[in-house]
Amino acid sequence: MSVKNKVQLITYPDSLGGNLKTLDCLLQDKLNGVFEGGVHILPPFPSSGDRGFAPLTYLEIDPDFGTWEDIQAISRHTDIMLDIMVNHISRQSVWFQDFLKKGRDSEYADLFITLDKLWDDGKPKAEDLDKVFLRRTKPFSTFTIEESGKQETVWTTFGRQDPSEQIDLDLNSDAAKQLLAGFLTHLSNMNVKYVRLDAVGYVIKKPGTSCFFVEPEIYDFLEWINTLAVPLGITLLPEVHSIYRYQYKLAEKGYWIYDFILPFLILEVLITRKSARLIEYLRTRPHNQFTMLDCHDGIPVKPDLDELVSTADARRIVDVCLKRGANLSLIFSDKYKSEDGFDVHQIRCSYYSVLDCDDDAYITARAVQFFTPGIPQVYYVGLLAGENDTEKVKRSGEGREINRHNFTMDEIEESLQKPVVKRLLRLIRFRNSHPAFEGDFSVKAVTDGFEMTWINVKSRCRLTVNLETGKSVITYTDDREQWITYQI
Image (tube, rainbow, N blue to C red; front, side, top):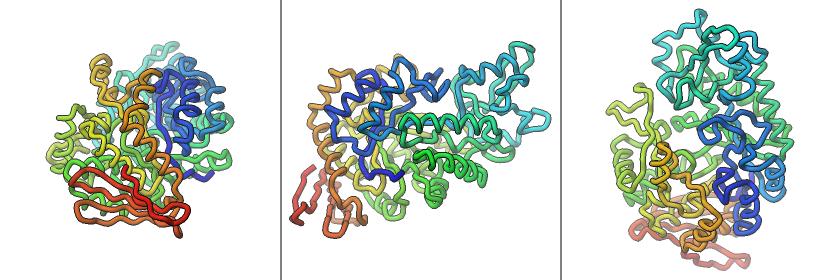
């Protein structure tokens, strides 16, 4: 399917009013005509951890959120994106539970990566482990098999617990491929139009490599799964946090990618009031990208900005963010830290808070995002100009909860009355409707700031950002080709 060049919403299934039914109502009422590009519903499946990202199955919806009928109801008026965590599945899934009971005698044993699949004697070599891009202290977990009492060690890329709740799948096995194909088919039958391939960069495990974005095997996997998705009417969005060169390779092969660089560069511009780096980036980046400012994790730093932003410059922005209440996630592997020890993986915060709750700066940031070529996504907290939820961090002990506030219907109603939210909703509708955004893009520096311009035959649209005042203005042509000024 073709991707609509309109703004999308990102939300958890329970974060806007409590469940999928309230989300459906909002999209048809208060947010009617706003998210014409679709809605990315973060994992609504039964899960044993990581707020949905340790799924037990993709064949069910967690009853706390609703049902597949609720998903289909939303799909009748709004295109839906859902995730498949292609790298792993829950420890509590029926497949791994059967393995825990029967071990190698389980019919599902080949779904998982026992260490003898990587090392003949089942013993990891230190020199191989030193090269692995770690997301936890060690990339495997050991379990005791119920029937035999034997211990089995399997690969587990993610998970805060030991043993992990997220068990890696062996995508070299026919069993895992058949399982994944069944999940995709089911999502298609439920009218899902987009599937984000979460953690796809980790699917290839190969001794002697980082076990992240292993070439050329990663391309073989993506080609295989895309061959499944296309006949099902599903557009895939690979999620890869890495140095921009890897992302660009995927873009060159025709895949949509995430622009994980833009959020930091926009923040840097508004803090330093210097736009040269952003302008150069906007001139050279691929256009087949989904853009965002905020998400359920944080603003990417390493490795996404490696080779683009020096650690000294990155530290300066990080320090400002910390003063404004942000917290940080860090790189585990020493090998992937900067030479000077800089190890910030993501800045965790509300984007509105990190801009010091400055309405003009926030709307300028969104305008720059919307004028950047690609498909804009707006995270639900950002939609409502939500601020850092430090109390939730204290209660949960999870730093990412700073930007995961669940809004009640009363809070939503109150937030929709904020002047900054009203300005944002107007800006989203403008981005959805003006025909110039289907044309050609350019960017240039001007006195006190920069301009971003779209031209589509006789339709024109220009954003002028004044970095001295932090304010922006849009000038555009209407149906009669008359120029109109829109002070955002």
